[in-house]
Amino acid sequence: MIYESENVEYKSQMLEDLYKEVIAFANTEGGVIYIGIDDQGNLTGIDNVDETYTKLTNGIRDAIQPDVTMFVRYILQENKVIRIEVGEGSYKPYYLKAKGLKPTGVYVRQGASSVQTSPDQIRRMIKDSDGDVFEEMRTMEQDLTFEEAEKAFERYGVEFSEDKYIALGLRNLHDDQYTNLALLLSDQCQHTTKVAVFGDTTNLTFKDSKEFGGSIFKQLDDTYSYLSLCNRTAAVFKGLERIEKSDYPEEALREALLNALVHRDYSFSGSIIINVNDAGMEFISIGGLLPGLSAEDIRSGISQPRNQKLAEIFHRLRLIESYGTGIRRIFSLYKDSPVQPKIQVTSNTFKLILPNLNAAEPLLQPATPPASTSVSATVTPQMKVVLDYLAEYGEITDEELQELLNIKKTRAYLLTRQMSEEGLIEIEGRGAGKKYRLS
Image (tube, rainbow, N blue to C red; front, side, top):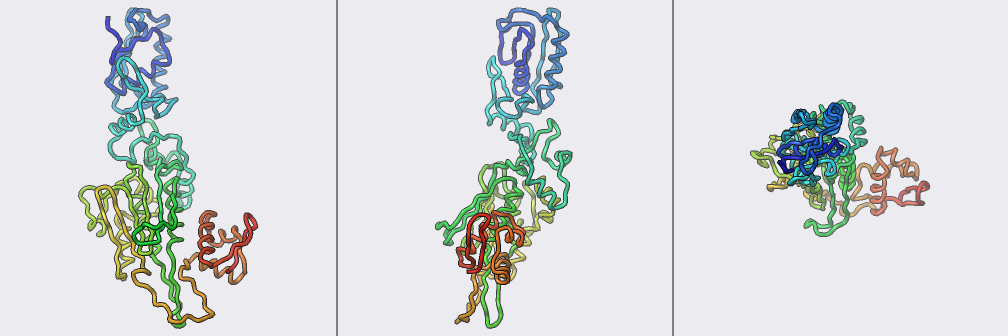
């Protein structure tokens, strides 16, 4: 008598848990299931072979994903026993459709039992089946929504619908499961961008910090809005001439942020780090350069995107022009500056440093400013719009300010808080009745 083992399983009757045995064999080295023999190896037979056979074949086809039927063979034996031969599958992990791609739905063979897998085992099987390209691999998180992605695609005039998911790389062809690329674009994206503002050039004294999560489209918008608040404008008078100069070219901030989001290695769980101090901004993303590339290659415009499909989506939305142009554009914006951007690369990180133009080349300050002139040394273009409005109309509400600048509530809050801290405006009231006036 043959006992149950890693490759043999007995079932006296057709039961629902038989599907997990098929999954377990397909996820390991294959095996044989006998229906009509009990756990002790005694022949029991099946009362209705035809009905059981139909239910069995339909169930295995419908209850298991990806399609495992090509690895399953059925043999009807004379003693009213059905022999099911299950081969090792080529697109693991196989799982119960009703449970999804998670430990409760994925089984492997362990001794004479079929047991649930661990998340690490699932990730290993996905990597072995899907390859090493992170954005093309199936994600374990399949309950995804795309509200921010839909807004972004609509904003840039590109169609975003479910029938486009496979073409965009958000779903795979085998079992229509979401990929890691879909997870990055989804509202459930688990990666974040962290910004820290320091009061010294050694990055030891914290002044403020923010962490932005959600879809990378939301991270792009929220992070850029916050960095814009950090991009101060030095404004002074030289004689009768007013000279204004931002700390950083706006386009340089945009390109540096896009470069960090599009080219980081998302197979690691860490965050993009942006450090801001009086001397400059550091954009630090996980993942060094791909093999064969040097920092000088990147500066020259040679690029090999780590996340090909993600880069294609950003290119389709016209957020990036073409591969390799962003870094070159940053350097061109600093061509007349005494201090140039820097690229620093380790085996696991890529750091791009943007110098503060006003720190590198400070504006001449007037020896004795006119007593009647009050000029802020940190007025951004958005702040100037607000100040000009207040100078003409006297006051502005939250709703009016958001409409004036075409910004969201969170950004309006950050902007008005900074203007208040710098003594540019006064805040009166709270809630819906809140108003802002010139100090």
